[in-house]
Length: 501
Image (cartoon, rainbow, N blue to C red; front, side, top):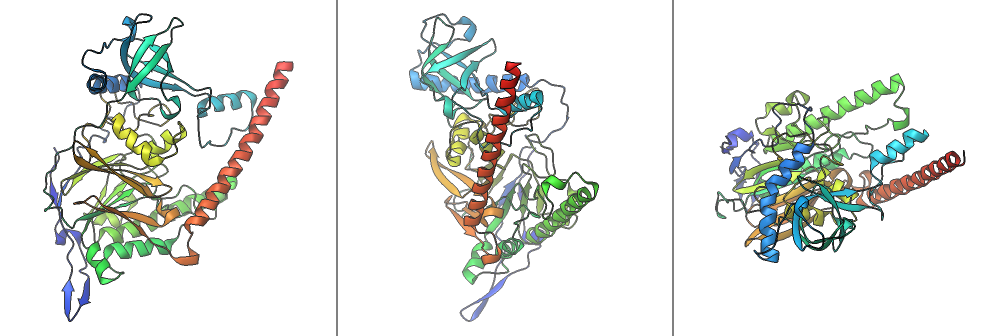
């Protein structure tokens, strides 16, 4: 059972910052608030991979069917005819509810099979998996059917529970006239009034990538000193003293340590150097977390290339990895995705895999819109377990959003963006948290007003500027595209040769 925890100044081991305002010295104390840990819905108890993934899809459909049915009745009237696929007749105007499946020829596993057959070097990772030959299917407990007509195949992905209205054609396909999703879930109850969370803030941070080639340690130190009150103007120190928690949303350790070329890692000597630099990166992160958590509570989430399990939900970092920071009671290792309640605000977030995977599997380019869509689909990671690794839950789907959070974020994004939507008159803040290693910025959120501000920390020419980061990303994407075209040409040539033979 979740228990509310109220942090005190002694628990925070806060070194009280002082500054002079006029002729009097003012002592600042860290603001406190009620904190309720997550319900451990993302914690794995019995780790068994013997269960088929079909159970996860069945649980998702059975749970969301009721919400989608209500949404269909609101949109098309209570008299709308809802049937299962097995009961649908040709030319009958009906509504069917099922799980979306998107057939994509450019999925990585298909490309790998082709490359294995023809003994060609696998194609580099693609930015997008979609093509004009993609098609949509809808599947319920009985069977599946192809969808045609008025439905945006380019913006939908596998795993969404949807209601479609139309009729079955003679050729066995279903012509869609209209469609709807579950919609926004019911708002979570606010446990504290606006007065109790007044002048309280949280900081959202992601993508430290400690140990990377372009990691700017000076910017990291500037950020830590600013949040802990050891630098900045008196007004800044006063505002930072009101930060009640910092959430680190994954990718804290780099997957490419500095000075090691990826193509040379096969030699024994360089493999040892690679491992040694990875250990050094963990030590550096331990020092950063130790300094940060000594002054403010920190929730540490794992990310896509952090040293934890790959499949979602990712489990917390082991404490033995951070011997210095683990002495602080204010450092909490949490799961990815992560949900908790801070000052009466329910906060839900992921380290970015959900948005990135939907970005690859659709033509949607706006990551903030993708984040909003997952909330309206009532599912954090609909593409899991199809194109995103997931644990095969046998009885339920923990990624279903049962209640609408007040703050919903995703980490490790190219830039900071935010949007305020309303659900039953209540505001909901959507945030894309920027990759700190590339942008040198994090996000400050006011828990009372839900206003958010980007905090940027630049170390000047020594650091990697945002323009350089964009140029590097563009150059890497361009190189991947050239390699991809070369590989495709080789594969096509070998296929033609086999056909001639």
